[in-house]
Image (cartoon, rainbow, N blue to C red; front, side, top):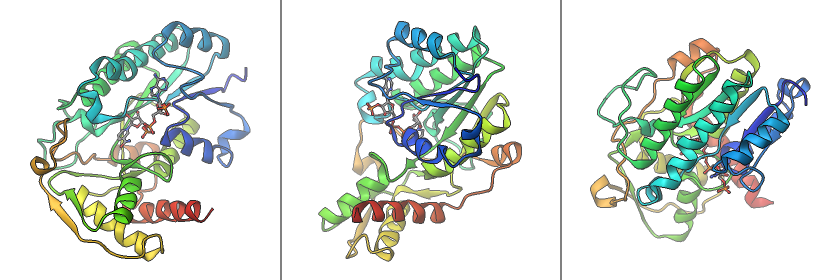
Length: 300
Ligand code: NDP
């Protein structure tokens, strides 16, 4: 194997698919090999098979995009969430520790409890409210303890893209199907396009991994309700929706989801901008680009 081999887990997820889309055009493709594994090729909960495959491929870097991401289901499916989001990360970290390998891992704003009212710094105390958040924090801890010098943890939030299931896709569907919509207005966070996150991942892979926690978002500080309004307006502007429907602000209590979510989970990305030298993305511009992709896929 090429000793710059990057093994990617969760290749069928929205982040994995976005990475595959951009890989060919990245400068990295010239001297690194990307090997993509979806769950059918590599189930991360089968630790012996994972280790066997890692021994066969001997990647230089593992990029772990796989996760149990159903925040509400995790409340009643704790073992499965921890198996993928924590134990599997420990398996990857353990193998990497004895094989001179780096791990780049994606984590979540849901490791925080939302009690702050200014953006969360990477070093802020994590105190998850949900099973999903706890499982993601356990994954971070496993990586930090087993691979202290060769990991990067990228915390992101409210990920969306033209691929798979996410808030933008759900809103667009509901805005077509329904006459009005209620959306939670008392949870504030930062939407993040998978495309902007992939740009960061490629930069980190290209520069060499400096261990630590990095925060990445597209810089907004808005509620789901405000995000839904922006999605509707952008979709109308780009001809994806033919009419405007009323969007009603809901409280978290009125919406009543199984998992508790932080009321405020904006991540401070300044360390990432400075350390990695990233351009500060703009959330409205990123949304525009993704809606454009959704529109062109709808035409196809
Ligand atoms: P997706 O749910 O789109 O993709 C996750 C992928 O992981 C899926 O393709 C899934 O497979 C795969 N997977 C699940 N279980 C296993 C397993 N046992 N073995 C191997 N693969 C498995 O997630 P995203 O792309 O949205 O998320 C990427 C990362 O970002 C995750 O770490 C997530 O926790 C984090 N994140 C996501 C946010 C979001 O809003 N989505 C917000 C903050 C962080 P299959 O397709 O077969 O189900």
